[in-house]
Image: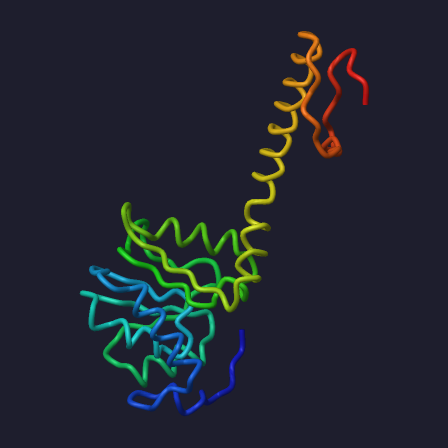
Length: 196
């Protein structure tokens, strides 16, 4: 991701944040209440949220895939640690962090699956992963995409169980409950003697 050579003025240390930035920071700080230990701001951007979170953690590190943003954060928010990383790989050891913050990052990475796998690899057992999305619809779309295969598998199992129930009822001379017609999943087959 490329960025302008200079960030907006409200990202500078001590600057008054704009309304959006203030709402975002308030939400993140609220979600971080009570968290301690070592934290990672994965996709830290200009570093402003990393700096806001820093007082409550023993250590916090900000990483981003954008070299201009990392350079700004290093200069503006020293002595906090900021470094460049690949979009879906940080280079930290497994289970390195008690808390990981991903604030409006997932919609912009090339592979959400790889990015989230990296988050899972980095967070310690019992740790916390805070993920924010720009709006609820993008969250719903991401969840649908990530869980698509699982959901399809569950739907096939549910449908197979309903069909088994229907067969048992027919064998016992009972009428199945009225249901909306459902399409058979691709690759599924009918039980012998069952009508379509």
